[in-house]
Length: 244
Length: 321
View 1 (cartoon, rainbow over the protein chains, first blue to last red):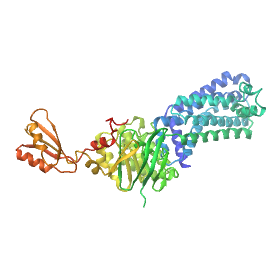
View 2: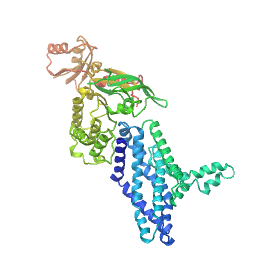
View 3: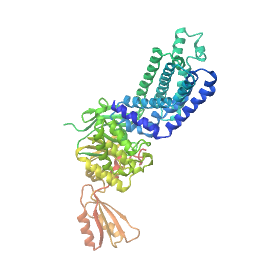
View 4: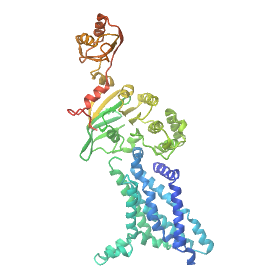
């Protein structure tokens, strides 16, 4: 546990030691603002809720989270520091989990900095704050799932650009698998059970419930198992690599 | 009591390439093993298997009784490792990096501070502790890498080219440090610099194309050189031809190499037949001829000779890359 904690502290500090943290947070908040107030028309709707705000999160994460995750392992492999850290007395999972939690904690910090939007709707009206808390929780979980995918893919390459592009594509497939454009592809020939399964694998369908404030155990289990699956794959990717 | 590092039938294949081929040896406390060999001979690959960074294709490595695959964490607890090129997190300061490594090694509080201070003192890192590693000179980076390797006072120290890129003073300091720590540790260093073997190692091993080709003391290694016991001399004004004729007939002389730019100024190397001492016979000859001796010394042997002899690909005359 202390080993994971040591990795976690180093990784989190690394974000703030470079401009990465500040650039990411500023862009995240800026895009959030644009999506919420212009595209989502938060004021014009005249409703005291944050649905326009949360509805854009999957699309924001789709590009920003892989950008955050791409360096996690690819950079260690490129610079050779993976040899330094993996020859310390640590198990692979210590490092995988430490790095992952640091990145997730960082997205949590970025998400926490959006609370002025929450304060705004409370100032202007009387929103259901329980719903908003549930939505924040769902958003954080979904960010964690995007991040687990990105971290695992980063472990497969030395090249951060490849890590980014592949992670965006894989994350996109996970996001949209519940939309008609994907389901239409299956309907007509695949049995209903498969269509339901594909649909159930969608970030969007699982997040939409939470964005409405419904905390369903199934959605939480979905995101949690997705995270665990990709972290496990991440451990395998590091263990099976040969050399740097 | 088993040796600190024990390697049995170790092999590593990368696809069709055999990087390390059935290597066995042991290193015990008090030994400093110098690992020599051309680039690509398998030195770093062997070190990476000892430290657990690479998994062996076959064979076992045991460190302090722990198998480096089966009991990786216990084994790595006892190892300090300086990887080739000393990779370090560029965005951390030297002090942060050392505290990070100490933290991962489960040091805490006062013990952590004490060990970090000790390592910092040993490597003279005080002036750069607060500086980001990417702004450090190559020499300081190497020293930070060295400091993190000795932080926990390990029993086994694996140093992959520890003096590469250091200036002569820094090389001297690092060698002194290795010698000082040698008594109670098993140390393996790899190097291209043959004089380093003489300076710090108690044992020299030449590895070529994945196999051990020489394993002996530096003295024995030098004795295998054709220059072992060779006599280097220069005489004031002797005609080169005459000097050669006079020396070639001396008992035990195999060859006379004359370096002179004209007919007279003569400096030469007299190479003995294997195992013979010729210095007294040579100096007697010079006296008899009445030549004035400017210089006369006996060589202990040239490691480069032996290195080239044992690592050359037969027929091609070049080393494999």
